[in-house]
Length: 399
Image (cartoon, rainbow, N blue to C red; front, side):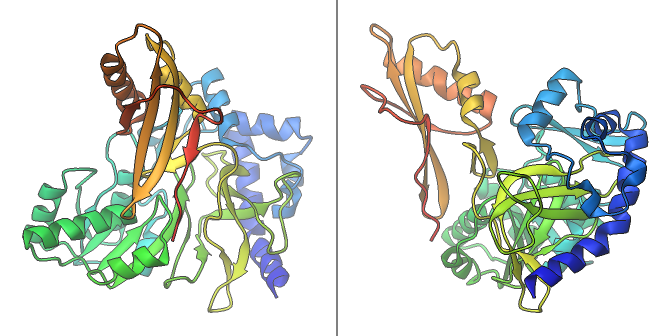
């Protein structure tokens, strides 16, 4: 049954994929160059299967391309009308294309039940990261009102939510718990009945806790580059594949699309001709499964390729950490440790001082570098020596 669903899904996308490939090849220089390097004539592409020979474009490759051909690495049509430009850690620049709900998150919000009359407390960042704008555009497209709460200042956010009667939430699941706990602590009313969460795993234990105050809590998945990729329609249902995009689960060695339930990298193609984001490797792992309604679903996020980890909704890569801390005077070594306490991520940076260095001043400098370069808050702990092993350790258990 599963292989039949995968074949049917691919055929459904054939016409849109072929049209996008031919149009993007004519408009987007970087994509035309990728096709030429793979020996693919865009006129010969009649469906999704014809792109199997096109190598997957990884995030690191996109970052390299952007540095060589600023600002977008040749993946955006020169004549594309852009509304905003965002910056994710890397730095990696992501454009907001023209049109309502350009990242298509409205589909996931509709599944949660958001519509006219809702007031959405949007607790994603509005600062450089596209997440806040993604959710805002989706909610506005559905006729809802947006409260642009952003990240942090829980005391003010729960007061605003109570005063304005917020009915829906968009943000990290861990932060939804932090807000509901803060409201209870202050004795404030809690009117949020629907929540669309993303950016980190949603263990069933956390979902059960959240549903005590917010009856509908559904998980979604997407990337800063491609927008919405999948979303739950009910708890534990797997991720329904979003419209406006073609999703593959690809073999980790060959890059070929899988037609079974094996784990592979999520590879996406955005079906817009002004954005040559075609066969883009997200770095996230998943597998195909069958949903409760018999439809094709993604089996959630099952890990990541490489060394990067997501902390409080932002990626942290060892390479970025090394760049942020390069040249810190008196730093003999460091190690980042990611943990999880009360359903919230913790980040600790252990630092070893060189002989004669001031450990207190060193810790303050490292803390400032992490905040400015990585956009993360970390506890900086001086230690006598750094243990052998990787410089980024993930100790979280998702239960």
